[in-house]
Amino acid sequence: ETGVTQSPTHLIKTRGQQVTLRCSSQSGHNTVSWYQQALGQGPQFIFQYYREEENGRGNFPPRFSGLQFPNYSSELNVNALELDDSALYLCASSVPQGGKDTQYFGPGTRLTVL
Amino acid sequence: SQQGEEDPQALSIQEGENATMNCSYKTSINNLQWYRQNSGRGLVHLILIRSNEREKHSGRLRVTLDTSKKSSSLLITASRAADTASYFCATDFSSARQLTFGSGTQLTVLP
Image (cartoon, rainbow over all chains, first blue to last red; front, side, top):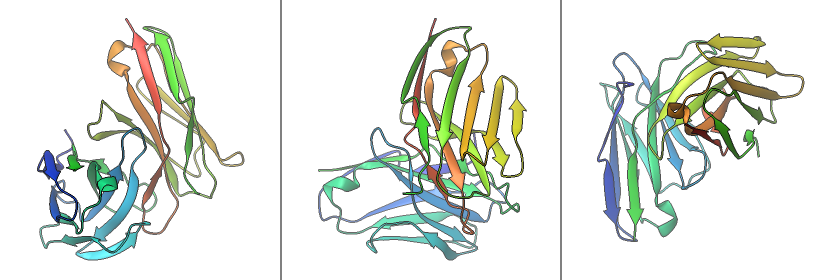
């Protein structure tokens, strides 16, 4: 157990809808990163939040957006869902440690877009 | 692409044997990390090796890093059926500390 929780566990949406995924970070961790993992692939970095500010973004369109709250929990929002958005969405929390940051992952949210 | 790549894509061994997985990457890194994932669940952090380190051990795990060849290896000794999982290497090369993952090695340990 990493202490990182995500909700919901599974989610089914239809194309064009919007979805919000939630992540609670490990106690004391001020950085949250989100990843998308398609079936059979490695996770791909979406973006990272550090102290409520976006601190880096991967190659994802603007319809992927996020928030981090004062308690360091985070949300991932995806608008105008597409079939290719079907994936496991993982969040990870960490604390900057000067080059030895370890990211602790939650169990993920499985999103299916029909 | 700056993504790391694992080799082999799949590995099947008998319980008790050693398993070796390799990872290659393309850019200078801050550190390299290995993760395990059981059947579509969350990733479990195994070990982190910094760019100025050459070898690290953790229990039955041994990781090496060769920055001149931009490669790393993960050795699991005396494998067990419970080691069956996908193993990913992830490189940290940016100031944002984002991780770039390879596509993983699927390890199957037969009892």
